[in-house]
Length: 296
Image 1 (cartoon, helix red, strand yellow):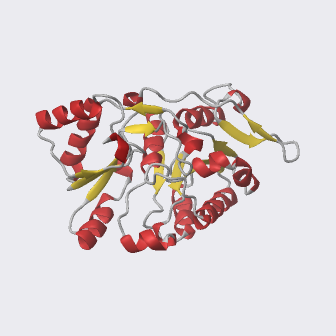
Image 2 (tube, rainbow, N blue to C red; image 1 turned 45 degrees about the vertical axis):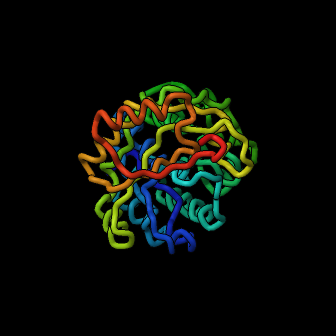
């Protein structure tokens, strides 16, 4: 049993184009949130929808873990654009329904939920996390666990029903997390890494894992996930990134890394320092990333 069951609502099977490509990655944003909440002394578990068959797998996880809190994340890190397929939105709605049927306090996070909180609240979500979710979620769980007297109206970054008809309370936006190095590393121990490895090596002959070096992008592409990141850019130190890479290599032995940043290495001097750290630690590893052509 767990205090908090994290789930993500991106089912690769429901996305025919990417299911055919079959390059699955674990839900990095969800793993960051799970790690952060675990650091606050909550027992956490993960339902990873990426390779699941249907929402009924989520129901089975709820029955197994019997959590008090069900936290449903969209897959914000793994895909650059705000691509909320209607099928994935419907999956999230069904996951909310299944959690509520089991008496869970149900919390939703992600770019689509931040953008359209009313839709998710109307389908049964108790709370929507607006923007970055870690700190907001921690304070909300503390409230319902009796660790703090702060009411939800005093917690930044929330949307929820007021209890008066269809009125929705939206609290002020929470300030950005600027010190990304202070966040605990993603909770990789919750992931069935062996299953991902088998899919990758069987289909492509190598195993790829995902990492993030930054959050956000200052540019204004009209299809991007602005409800989460806005137009700001915060970056981890090259030293912290290389330290995580070394840990992943030692622990899980990936052959390749996907840096899932909206834009990699935008901060002046970052790429040079990153290269120096890679060379010093002999961590040369093939990787792919996204960047603007006019910045190369």
